[in-house]
Picture 1: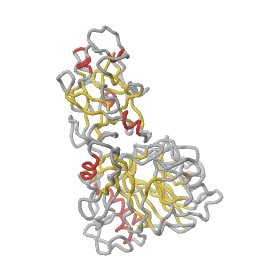
Picture 2: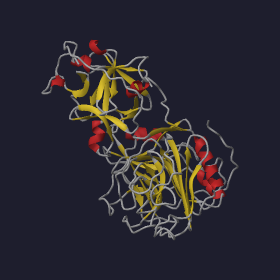
Picture 3: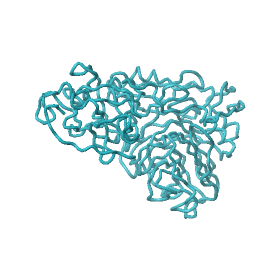
Length: 517
């Protein structure tokens, strides 16, 4: 917007204890390490309970107290080079700094999530299946930043079309053999697509019938089973049905959940299975269902095949969204007591999404961006809740909380260039600032390179000499600009009205302010 223009505008008013548990040391059996761990991980606890891990996956930390190997592998876009990302110390947290250094100036994807048990049950790019072609997309390596135990780490951000799989596993339950599994997930990142799963699936990537899967599902789809409220729900994907309890459709005891960090549990044995869940930051697990197999044909006995999937359905259905931080699959049906001890370990780990800084363009920080043009220097970059369009609006101390949240952004490393930036909406997690037909709006990542580029902006010194300007990574002559209170990527002169040279320098310059929320 230039101050030479006189326009009228309507302003809309928008309405809108952690417990640490001391655990006794256990001996690791049948896993990657053979000595007693200095500290315990979930797999040490499962082993002590007689149900050792058969697969253990995490991009954030070791799941054994003595594990010192690689957690995952990344691939760099510029040259295709690969790098394993390990831990800072045995039994410790991911070495995110190694990823940041390797991926600086470009983008990376996660190619392999290593199995920490020593059984070789690694997860890699899912192939085509009966429901969808392949190979599936790989997760952008910087899209799910998190703090774990005070250390920076990254989760696995599953956009629709993204998926991981291993059809040739070792030691995973088959047929009616007992097993358990848990996953730590982002409880705010989900959709109604099929199917965000982690667990046991078909080895052919095809739907081979009822009871051929046993996996954790998280999301809000209601095509099969569902629970109380509007969702999302933790359910079990048993193939040709998502089950929230013994009945094939509605089960009132499976509640909608809303934890930022969610522990989800599914376990099954002959004519017995359960769903449990809880806040991964504090407290214990609740049991949403425990009882006999579903009262539908094909699920008793079960016909599990032993593949492992992440982010997709057994037949490669890949319309889902979610974020995965860690999870395991066990040999044997874990007791509630063992799972409660695992939950205490997870809660004591210290998962957090809290910004490390405020008011700075550092990935992991939280900011608000204020316009500098004379007309609008009390206005901030905001998004509209109704249509996801991005505008500038006046925000002050007396503004509604909803408007303050709309004007607050989480700073992320750039999806297409980790030396640049991507901005995630604070109040709509999983939706990012991106340009579309040169106009800015919020969008959910589809896993493609076009979205990553549209959502990546490189900060430069302000074009007016004040603050910062944000250069489009895929249109380097265009910068984020407000014009008539809407926001675009705009050039200094060009065919569109928002490319006007009048006041272009000021309109493309922004002050990085303390976040409103």
